[in-house]
Image (cartoon, rainbow, N blue to C red; front, top):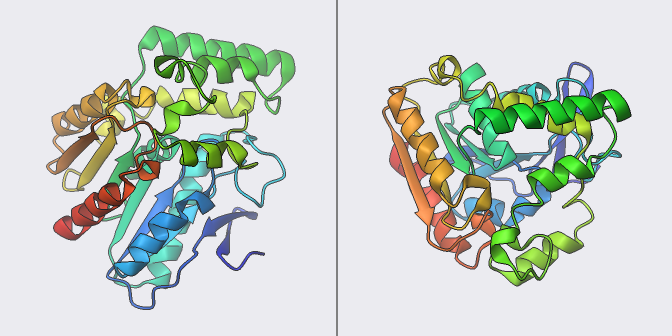
Length: 302
């Protein structure tokens, strides 16, 4: 196994977390949940920044992603909840490794939805950061998406890669940046970062029918009022996104979600929209500013 990774076991199944730097006595711990069609090693720069500020990072590879999986984009049945439970196992491991240290949960894109579900189910962290996130989808649109996923699941099975659902989901994001240089212009204004993503064999894969099905189902649950109400009212939550991020409707989604959280009585909700940034704020040319803002949020609330 690569030395930068630790292996964790839940229900007799192994998954992996990235820990490229060792901080002997950290001021606090940072647990990161990655997005879809990427992997934990992309968070090396963030880990290095945090290490230089005496913070320990752990970053999880979800099922179907990372250098240890043989089946990119594959989730077994109930995959979204498996991601949430795996994340809790990592949080508990980080707490055991660093007793009496505060733990910050960070989730980017799909990882933000998993993190939102986590603070509803477990909430065993001291703050939560949601990057490149979104609010609930329109009811009819979500119903159609779930229906298509169920239909494909019936005819071709869970483990078949779904180009149709991929096109309907991610294929739309590039339109506002036409004429396009690559299929992933929507990720960042930094061409070098986009090219690194395109060339990375562990990025940009087409997810399976089962993954899309479980993710769409989760979208129908995590924004329900009764589930938002489960989030501790005193948990500090920081949302940030780019003003040109199509995942969050160019800033409208994170803004709406922050208002939803405040409306549920959560006392400390803050939001930052970075002007002209796209989906991956941590991979924009101004990523040093983004990392400093993340660190400042953490030190302020802790």
